Length: 268
Length: 337
Image (tube, rainbow over all chains, first blue to last red; front, top):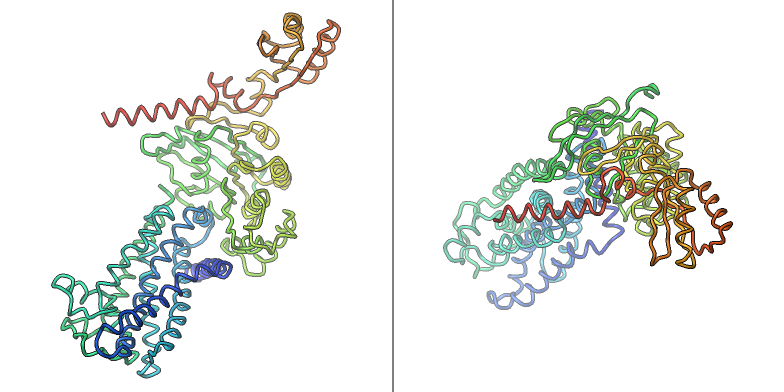
């Protein structure tokens, strides 16, 4: 059997195993679904009335940001899943089998991608309930979901690397989440990047999360409320392109890092 | 391809592995003829698991070489992985998968087709007496059932060499007997087995040859009987009713035993080493009865790992560990100074 087909089969088996785990512990889905719902409701009803005159305009703007935030958080679930497998000795079992090395990582990121897709679906329904609508074309909307999933998958590889570095589930639980907050909040996910003070503004304008949020809005046809200024930075005007390029860049950097770390982690 | 009976299935030469300043393995050699069982016996931290991890390609040695089923563990780890089945001391069973699903997954990862993996999983479920539980998530299993499942996982691909790292540690006596039965069947099938254990009795039951390992070095090798001969056979222990009977008891035991008896006045106990086991016991009781000594309690102790250690190293296993920890603590102090 060729290397590629063996790798695909092994990755498929690991993905299946991870998804069976999710099926048997549905509470694993709580984080990936309840948290975004909570954000949609909190921001829609706590913030929307203070930002601009028209709460419904902010809700429409908000959804792109929460989509971006949700897929970014996918990395934290990968971190914890990886660390748990390592701690329980599952990785040792895998490493003693004649399987493709990277399959454990591909299987983990693939199953987390599926969980992420469920999260997007739940959130979309929740958004529709608070007044969000897809106003662009069908093709653009499909493109928006595919872009979100690509970013989710890319973030998952950062998460896998962090999970392998953490060494224990306890460390992974904080290490996986803590960096998510600055990364998702110093962005245009919930406010305008252009209103932030100097250095934060630069970070926010070039933060891939900003590009993902802006690109989702533009592909879904959701307008920006007038009170939220438009940034002049290059990514703001090429959000879809920058979103794709930065997702691919994350993949190109972190997939090899994670694979290298995986090879090393138990053979110390 | 079944290797000829005379061939060597596993060979390790001068394995060395250090973790920081600890020398976990300090030149371990071993050889397992195909179709036999080698027991690797030693206390916690002696280097058993490190040896297993090197032979199963989970760890690279700092120096030395090892071959499993003819394949170099460092140069050709994939070929080694295809030839081995590993059952760890912490059962690496996925508790949310059913027993059947666990085995199916392992089969698929060995490269078996869906149908082959499925029928092999069913076969092992029934062979390991997990029929009733095969379709329940493994988290509902008892410790013994989990261990059986983990053991079954090592056999999915019918590997030439099976490595069992402390297969019965933490099991209750029934679980231990169950596991021994399974290992016995394996051996009958001609599989080569490397078994690590802390229990001499277990190595005695299952292994053709035993290596005793301590501080990363092989300190003795031989059959169970040879090792026991070094220890000096069993220990006979008699507790009498009256302290005044101790002298007579000691005299009798000196004649029956192979060594000077040891008398403990307060416990009213006399102990002696014996070579002939139960025969010596019967003889001692008969003579004590003739002398009119009232025996309160009697016991015949087979040599334990501690006895073997005591005989081989002059210290007991636990002391070895404590001394080790003291040494480490000293080392740390020295570093901070």
